[in-house]
Length: 308
Image (cartoon, rainbow, N blue to C red; front, side, top):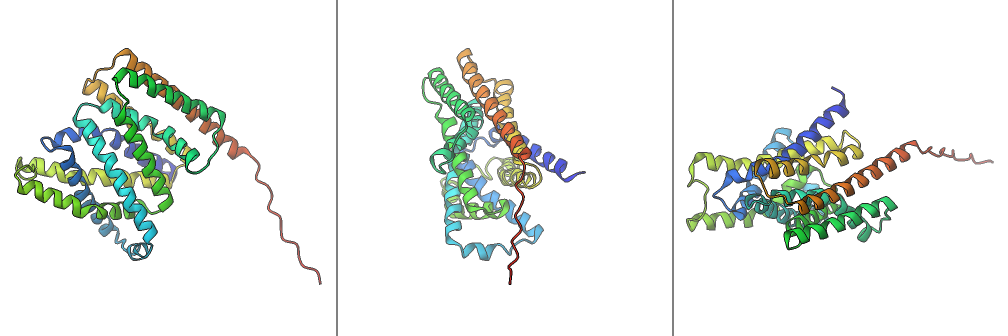
């Protein structure tokens, strides 16, 4: 199989797994969102250490520890992604799957705004149109919900911030996940021990199946991330940009078709505006990428030979 096609399959697998997460988290009840989050942190570390052991890939650890700036960035990334995970688990287990899907739909637009505000990037006219439509959609959905869609906004903002920090840190997927889970290992374990000691923990008290599902949360966190990394190094970024919509589409379909969340006409209208904004944004990105590929590369001037 050609390398690019294999990368495409890795990408589809990663985003499909992320998109089907809403079917998994309810299986962990009666565990609450915070307990699930703590187990996810602990078991993610176990899973990624197992993967590193199989690969015998430990040489990165000592050089990274000697770079306190990168370690601090990854600790901050761990805090941000913990907020993202916690809100997402809460959303799914309280019947807000559609709103969580909205958060990941608007995440590319939030990343664009971060580029403008933080990195001083300039947007093209069509990108401003997409951002403007996204803002209108948020107003429409706020009127529909009777409140700002805070779950979607927190998910989009936290995921966009996480991506920005990871880009600055520039550390591999397995390596960064190891450091991120290590950063919150002690608080997560302390919380679980206190919960179990008070008799409120669910691990071990609801059968082997429930305990196994909690432990499996680490595997389903690590595997799609590694698939995504494998895809990112094999396919163009424009393809990754298109693949990223698989996850929120699947989340939306799960919320509407399986969980049967209410979708009044005003909510459909808000989502329709978001989808139009994303269509414009994607079209502009593809057009710009195509124009960049077709632009002639200026010839490299050869250095002049010195005369004697």
